Image (cartoon, rainbow, N blue to C red; front, side, top):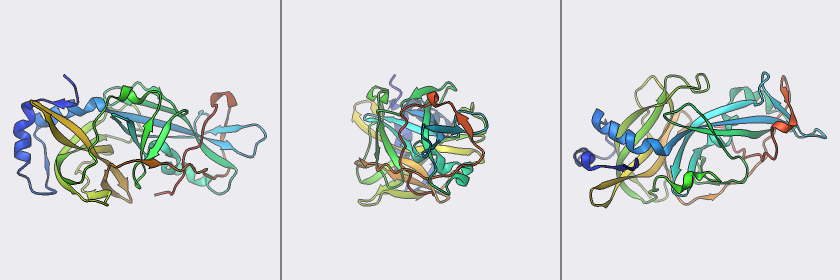
Length: 293
Protein backbone atom coordinates (compact mmCIF):
# COMPACT_ATOMS: atom_id res chain seq x y z
CA UNK A 1 0.00 0.00 0.00
CA UNK A 2 1.29 3.48 -0.82
CA UNK A 3 2.42 4.91 2.50
CA UNK A 4 1.09 8.34 1.57
CA UNK A 5 -2.47 7.10 0.86
CA UNK A 6 -4.81 6.46 3.78
CA UNK A 7 -7.44 3.76 3.57
CA UNK A 8 -11.10 4.25 4.36
CA UNK A 9 -10.42 3.13 7.91
CA UNK A 10 -9.80 6.83 8.65
CA UNK A 11 -13.20 7.90 7.34
CA UNK A 12 -14.98 7.71 10.68
CA UNK A 13 -12.25 9.71 12.42
CA UNK A 14 -12.27 12.39 9.71
CA UNK A 15 -16.07 12.65 9.82
CA UNK A 16 -15.94 13.22 13.58
CA UNK A 17 -13.11 15.73 13.19
CA UNK A 18 -15.14 17.77 10.70
CA UNK A 19 -17.48 18.69 13.55
CA UNK A 20 -14.69 20.37 15.53
CA UNK A 21 -14.71 24.20 15.78
CA UNK A 22 -12.00 26.34 14.16
CA UNK A 23 -8.56 26.06 15.81
CA UNK A 24 -9.69 23.26 18.09
CA UNK A 25 -6.80 21.10 19.16
CA UNK A 26 -7.21 17.52 20.30
CA UNK A 27 -5.27 14.27 20.50
CA UNK A 28 -5.91 11.54 17.95
CA UNK A 29 -7.03 8.12 19.15
CA UNK A 30 -4.20 5.60 19.25
CA UNK A 31 -5.55 3.65 16.25
CA UNK A 32 -5.91 6.75 14.06
CA UNK A 33 -2.49 8.03 15.13
CA UNK A 34 -0.89 4.78 14.03
CA UNK A 35 -2.56 5.04 10.63
CA UNK A 36 -1.33 8.60 10.19
CA UNK A 37 2.21 7.61 11.19
CA UNK A 38 2.17 4.83 8.61
CA UNK A 39 0.86 7.23 5.98
CA UNK A 40 3.51 9.94 6.44
CA UNK A 41 6.68 8.29 7.76
CA UNK A 42 8.21 7.39 4.38
CA UNK A 43 8.01 11.03 3.31
CA UNK A 44 9.98 12.37 6.30
CA UNK A 45 13.69 12.21 7.04
CA UNK A 46 16.32 13.51 9.46
CA UNK A 47 19.04 15.81 8.07
CA UNK A 48 22.51 16.14 9.57
CA UNK A 49 24.35 19.16 8.20
CA UNK A 50 27.99 19.78 9.11
CA UNK A 51 30.07 22.84 8.42
CA UNK A 52 33.68 23.99 8.62
CA UNK A 53 35.37 27.37 8.97
CA UNK A 54 37.56 28.60 6.11
CA UNK A 55 40.35 31.17 6.37
CA UNK A 56 39.62 33.47 3.45
CA UNK A 57 42.92 35.38 3.85
CA UNK A 58 45.26 32.38 3.39
CA UNK A 59 47.18 32.03 0.11
CA UNK A 60 46.05 28.40 -0.06
CA UNK A 61 42.61 27.41 1.29
CA UNK A 62 42.73 26.64 5.03
CA UNK A 63 39.84 24.80 6.66
CA UNK A 64 39.23 24.28 10.36
CA UNK A 65 37.21 21.83 12.42
CA UNK A 66 36.76 21.59 16.17
CA UNK A 67 38.46 19.37 18.75
CA UNK A 68 40.26 17.18 16.19
CA UNK A 69 37.15 16.58 14.09
CA UNK A 70 36.91 17.38 10.40
CA UNK A 71 33.89 19.60 10.99
CA UNK A 72 33.42 22.63 13.22
CA UNK A 73 29.73 22.15 14.01
CA UNK A 74 26.60 20.29 12.98
CA UNK A 75 22.84 20.60 13.13
CA UNK A 76 19.95 18.11 13.05
CA UNK A 77 16.61 18.93 11.54
CA UNK A 78 13.75 17.46 9.51
CA UNK A 79 13.26 17.24 5.77
CA UNK A 80 10.13 16.32 3.87
CA UNK A 81 9.75 14.90 0.38
CA UNK A 82 7.46 16.62 -2.13
CA UNK A 83 6.81 16.08 -5.83
CA UNK A 84 9.30 18.79 -6.81
CA UNK A 85 12.20 17.79 -4.52
CA UNK A 86 12.23 18.30 -0.77
CA UNK A 87 11.90 21.02 1.85
CA UNK A 88 14.48 21.89 4.50
CA UNK A 89 14.47 24.34 7.37
CA UNK A 90 17.06 27.02 8.04
CA UNK A 91 19.01 24.72 10.38
CA UNK A 92 20.00 22.58 7.38
CA UNK A 93 20.99 25.58 5.27
CA UNK A 94 22.79 27.79 7.81
CA UNK A 95 23.68 25.48 10.73
CA UNK A 96 26.15 27.94 12.31
CA UNK A 97 23.31 30.35 13.10
CA UNK A 98 22.05 27.82 15.65
CA UNK A 99 25.46 26.76 17.01
CA UNK A 100 26.38 28.56 20.30
CA UNK A 101 30.12 27.92 19.92
CA UNK A 102 30.17 29.74 16.59
CA UNK A 103 29.33 33.07 18.26
CA UNK A 104 32.94 33.69 19.34
CA UNK A 105 34.03 33.60 15.68
CA UNK A 106 31.82 36.41 14.38
CA UNK A 107 34.11 39.37 15.15
CA UNK A 108 35.84 39.94 11.80
CA UNK A 109 36.10 38.85 8.18
CA UNK A 110 38.93 36.35 8.44
CA UNK A 111 36.94 33.11 8.78
CA UNK A 112 33.77 32.17 6.98
CA UNK A 113 31.57 29.08 7.56
CA UNK A 114 31.24 26.66 4.64
CA UNK A 115 28.98 23.64 4.37
CA UNK A 116 30.71 20.27 4.39
CA UNK A 117 28.91 16.92 4.71
CA UNK A 118 25.12 16.90 4.35
CA UNK A 119 23.53 13.56 5.17
CA UNK A 120 20.08 12.13 5.81
CA UNK A 121 18.45 9.10 7.35
CA UNK A 122 14.91 7.84 7.55
CA UNK A 123 12.95 8.42 10.74
CA UNK A 124 13.12 4.66 11.43
CA UNK A 125 16.86 4.11 10.91
CA UNK A 126 20.17 5.44 12.26
CA UNK A 127 22.27 4.94 9.10
CA UNK A 128 23.03 8.16 7.23
CA UNK A 129 23.35 8.56 3.46
CA UNK A 130 24.94 11.44 1.60
CA UNK A 131 23.04 14.40 0.20
CA UNK A 132 24.90 16.64 -2.28
CA UNK A 133 26.11 20.13 -1.33
CA UNK A 134 27.03 21.01 -4.91
CA UNK A 135 24.97 21.18 -8.11
CA UNK A 136 21.79 21.82 -6.18
CA UNK A 137 18.99 24.35 -6.54
CA UNK A 138 17.92 26.03 -3.30
CA UNK A 139 14.92 28.36 -3.26
CA UNK A 140 13.44 30.26 -0.36
CA UNK A 141 9.70 29.72 -0.13
CA UNK A 142 8.97 31.72 3.03
CA UNK A 143 10.17 34.72 4.99
CA UNK A 144 10.54 32.21 7.85
CA UNK A 145 13.51 30.63 6.05
CA UNK A 146 11.94 27.47 4.66
CA UNK A 147 13.76 26.19 1.57
CA UNK A 148 12.89 24.02 -1.40
CA UNK A 149 15.79 21.89 -2.65
CA UNK A 150 16.29 20.08 -5.94
CA UNK A 151 19.39 17.96 -6.53
CA UNK A 152 20.57 14.69 -8.03
CA UNK A 153 18.80 12.77 -5.25
CA UNK A 154 15.40 14.50 -4.92
CA UNK A 155 13.93 11.06 -4.05
CA UNK A 156 12.76 10.41 -7.65
CA UNK A 157 10.03 13.07 -7.30
CA UNK A 158 8.16 10.77 -4.94
CA UNK A 159 6.65 12.86 -2.20
CA UNK A 160 3.64 14.67 -0.84
CA UNK A 161 1.48 16.90 -3.00
CA UNK A 162 1.52 20.48 -1.72
CA UNK A 163 -1.59 22.47 -0.78
CA UNK A 164 -0.98 26.21 -1.36
CA UNK A 165 -4.64 27.31 -1.37
CA UNK A 166 -6.23 29.75 1.07
CA UNK A 167 -9.32 28.88 3.07
CA UNK A 168 -10.37 26.57 5.88
CA UNK A 169 -8.16 23.53 6.48
CA UNK A 170 -9.13 20.52 8.57
CA UNK A 171 -5.93 18.63 9.13
CA UNK A 172 -3.33 17.28 11.53
CA UNK A 173 -0.25 18.66 13.20
CA UNK A 174 2.42 15.96 13.15
CA UNK A 175 5.28 16.67 15.56
CA UNK A 176 8.44 14.53 15.77
CA UNK A 177 10.13 14.42 19.16
CA UNK A 178 13.14 12.77 20.85
CA UNK A 179 14.15 12.30 24.47
CA UNK A 180 17.22 14.53 23.99
CA UNK A 181 18.49 16.79 21.21
CA UNK A 182 20.09 14.66 18.50
CA UNK A 183 23.30 16.65 18.93
CA UNK A 184 23.58 15.01 22.36
CA UNK A 185 22.53 11.49 21.35
CA UNK A 186 22.61 10.96 17.61
CA UNK A 187 21.13 7.44 17.42
CA UNK A 188 17.68 8.28 18.79
CA UNK A 189 14.63 7.40 16.70
CA UNK A 190 11.94 10.11 16.72
CA UNK A 191 8.44 9.43 17.99
CA UNK A 192 5.22 11.23 17.03
CA UNK A 193 2.78 13.61 18.65
CA UNK A 194 -0.29 14.07 16.45
CA UNK A 195 -3.08 16.59 16.96
CA UNK A 196 -6.15 17.59 14.99
CA UNK A 197 -6.30 21.26 14.07
CA UNK A 198 -8.68 23.32 11.97
CA UNK A 199 -7.15 26.49 10.53
CA UNK A 200 -8.21 29.30 8.25
CA UNK A 201 -5.45 30.33 5.83
CA UNK A 202 -5.85 33.95 4.80
CA UNK A 203 -4.51 35.55 1.63
CA UNK A 204 -1.33 37.52 2.31
CA UNK A 205 -0.60 35.84 5.66
CA UNK A 206 2.20 33.29 5.61
CA UNK A 207 2.35 31.97 9.19
CA UNK A 208 0.08 31.24 12.14
CA UNK A 209 1.08 30.86 15.77
CA UNK A 210 0.14 27.55 17.42
CA UNK A 211 0.44 26.05 20.88
CA UNK A 212 3.50 23.99 21.68
CA UNK A 213 2.52 20.41 22.57
CA UNK A 214 2.49 19.53 26.24
CA UNK A 215 5.50 17.24 26.41
CA UNK A 216 8.86 17.07 28.14
CA UNK A 217 10.49 15.66 25.03
CA UNK A 218 12.69 17.63 22.64
CA UNK A 219 10.83 18.82 19.52
CA UNK A 220 12.74 18.03 16.35
CA UNK A 221 10.13 19.66 14.09
CA UNK A 222 6.86 18.92 12.39
CA UNK A 223 4.36 19.49 9.61
CA UNK A 224 0.70 20.30 8.97
CA UNK A 225 -1.14 17.83 6.72
CA UNK A 226 -4.63 18.06 5.25
CA UNK A 227 -6.62 15.27 3.56
CA UNK A 228 -7.67 15.36 -0.07
CA UNK A 229 -10.45 13.13 -1.47
CA UNK A 230 -9.43 12.76 -5.11
CA UNK A 231 -10.37 9.15 -5.82
CA UNK A 232 -13.04 6.79 -4.62
CA UNK A 233 -11.89 4.91 -1.53
CA UNK A 234 -8.66 6.91 -1.08
CA UNK A 235 -7.56 9.77 1.13
CA UNK A 236 -4.33 11.53 0.16
CA UNK A 237 -2.26 13.53 2.62
CA UNK A 238 -1.22 16.95 1.29
CA UNK A 239 1.47 19.08 2.89
CA UNK A 240 -0.09 22.44 3.83
CA UNK A 241 2.47 23.83 6.29
CA UNK A 242 5.83 23.38 7.98
CA UNK A 243 6.21 23.92 11.71
CA UNK A 244 8.85 26.51 12.50
CA UNK A 245 10.29 27.74 15.82
CA UNK A 246 10.87 31.49 15.92
CA UNK A 247 11.54 33.69 18.95
CA UNK A 248 10.42 30.99 21.42
CA UNK A 249 7.11 30.45 19.59
CA UNK A 250 5.87 27.81 17.14
CA UNK A 251 4.19 28.67 13.85
CA UNK A 252 2.58 26.86 10.96
CA UNK A 253 4.35 28.33 7.92
CA UNK A 254 2.21 28.26 4.78
CA UNK A 255 3.66 27.04 1.50
CA UNK A 256 3.64 29.27 -1.55
CA UNK A 257 5.40 29.86 -4.84
CA UNK A 258 9.17 29.93 -4.24
CA UNK A 259 11.54 32.84 -4.73
CA UNK A 260 15.26 32.68 -5.48
CA UNK A 261 17.45 32.61 -2.39
CA UNK A 262 20.06 35.34 -2.01
CA UNK A 263 23.56 34.01 -1.29
CA UNK A 264 25.46 36.13 1.24
CA UNK A 265 28.98 35.53 2.56
CA UNK A 266 29.12 35.31 6.39
CA UNK A 267 31.97 36.88 8.37
CA UNK A 268 34.08 35.52 11.29
CA UNK A 269 37.40 35.42 13.33
CA UNK A 270 39.93 32.85 14.70
CA UNK A 271 40.63 31.13 18.09
CA UNK A 272 41.27 27.50 19.16
CA UNK A 273 40.59 25.69 15.87
CA UNK A 274 41.62 22.31 14.45
CA UNK A 275 43.27 22.51 10.98
CA UNK A 276 41.85 20.17 8.32
CA UNK A 277 43.70 18.70 5.36
CA UNK A 278 42.49 20.59 2.31
CA UNK A 279 41.69 17.45 0.33
CA UNK A 280 38.84 16.73 2.74
CA UNK A 281 36.59 19.39 1.20
CA UNK A 282 36.54 20.57 -2.40
CA UNK A 283 34.32 23.03 -4.24
CA UNK A 284 32.18 23.92 -1.22
CA UNK A 285 29.96 26.93 -1.88
CA UNK A 286 28.93 29.19 1.03
CA UNK A 287 25.17 29.29 1.68
CA UNK A 288 23.16 32.41 2.59
CA UNK A 289 23.78 34.06 5.93
CA UNK A 290 20.76 36.19 6.85
CA UNK A 291 19.99 37.27 10.37
CA UNK A 292 20.41 35.40 13.67
CA UNK A 293 17.14 34.65 15.43
